[in-house]
Image (cartoon, rainbow, N blue to C red):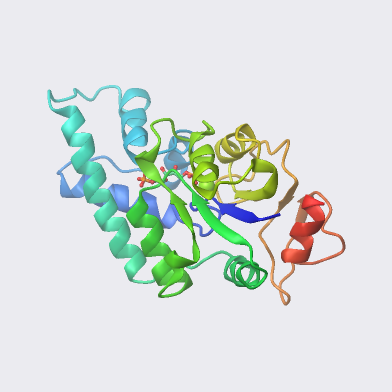
Length: 249
Ligand code: XBP
Ligand code: MG
């Protein structure tokens, strides 16, 4: 095992319900649109990854009465830019903590000489701001590769973003372990041939995680063990480097 590759939204932090969703709604208000994505609707919209893609999905499937202006493509770009601005402001206020066990495992992995990477659908600014404000001032530099956003045209569940990260790392999939929280994410990482650990998140409790190495409530902490939903934690109550090595042996 040489590297760990992490999804961001739902995996490093619970960013969707109280982060991205709020930022989308702020952008809609800013543009004078009466669209409001409530918690339940947002759960349905998460079927499509990528913010710009999600706005289009909403208009096509949930807001069919809306008459698109001739410059709709520009509107989507502008809305998404505004959304990213609102989301980054939210992160800068320290609004979204990392999930249990994430900072601990990242520190342990660094000490053990493992290389770290990110493979996410979200925009690059969102990743670096989260790492800076919720992990450490130099948190972004802990990751050798940050594969994010539109760097590949086909977003998750396509495997492209993970394949891009593997290419930049110069490693084979069998030398790495991926961390995901959603069915689309797992399809993407498995599609790239990566053994994958899943920590379920707010919106993904009922997803199909067939093919994952293990599925847990979270990565766990020594004083707050995680719940194991499938897989063998080798008797440990939290995920550390030794548990990961056991999975990769
Ligand atoms: C994350 C996403 C993203 C974010 C929004 O999926 O679906 O679309 O919700 O990000 P995953 P942007 O965790 O599977 O990568 O608005 O920056 O696109
Ligand atoms: Mg995710």
